[in-house]
Image (tube, rainbow, N blue to C red; front, top):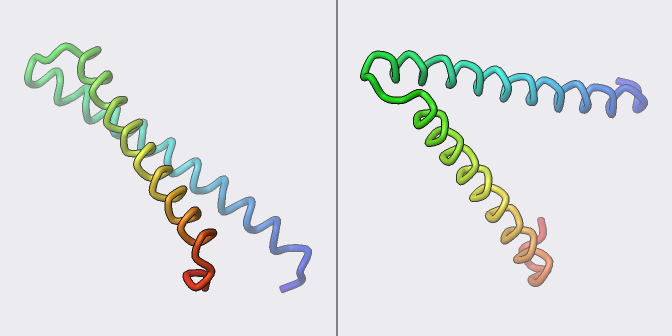
Length: 80
């Protein structure tokens, strides 16, 4: 593969991951609205809880990534 094509393919991969994430959010929203209707829960409350869960999960991932980066920066033996 020519070296000039590699960044292009990496950007396509990043776009694919974003599209997959968006599609998963849409499907989760549809499923949660169907469950809310079935159990009679207020739809706004369901979406509020769903948003809180997603944001907390994203924050945990970011914190873990930062801690790993800090740990590898402080201890050169951990770099691989």
